[in-house]
Length: 319
Image (cartoon, rainbow, N blue to C red; front, side, top):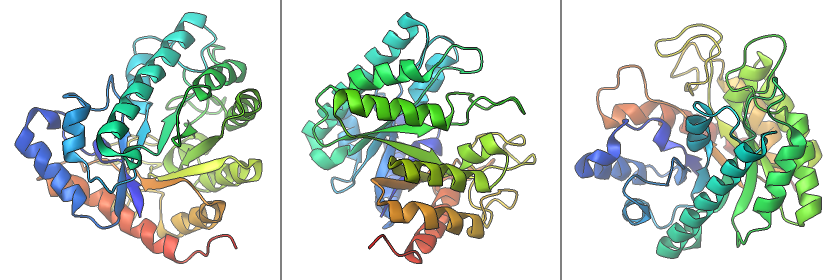
């Protein structure tokens, strides 16, 4: 089973209505392919607190937490913020926020059990092209964070599109090579286990070619740090809800025809990813431009999830 980033498709004010929120999670619990959620950390894991989130989650799910929503929100206002920041204050603020994330993760695990969170994804903000970020700073942050007591929760650095001289980036954070070096350095310094994760769409946004995700997966697999893979589409043309190359998490092309994430492209990526014995595999797809109801908001992502399950079933794991 797979993780599903349902927060990305959820209504903006979902938590304001207990009835609507309850129905949303009922739909998620009813999908047999969902083995856990990707939970977004934004000032917290849930607007109403960990206890409310505990009441909504399936106790058998193996969930992961990503700092991406929080990182994006703060970087939009503070360009010196991030775990890779060259600004000591900006880096310190980001590390302190991961400490708050850590506390919420273990509060949820205490309430629901150790499966409640099995991995945490971190990011290498801020913008790298201006010199505001660097791999040495990310390594320093990761070394400190990895030194905390995480029990059996795995730490992953999720790659976003890097700064490039050929086109404007969506995020423009560190390059994959810089992240690999930072992770290896942090592992050597801390003795902790740290991995890396690829999002199909973000790698394609960076490289401007569908094969870019496979290239990134292969490089991390060769480095021995490939632990996570998320399926998310992107288009090279305008769609009903995106500009060309915009990172808005389109579905597979069978659902979103403009998406570059075809069944063949997904199969190519899975052929590289599955033999790596990943700790996390999942889907992140947004809602359609004009969703009619909660089920409609989930439909593109669930269609992509079923495509992933089909591709996954045709690849043999490592012997």
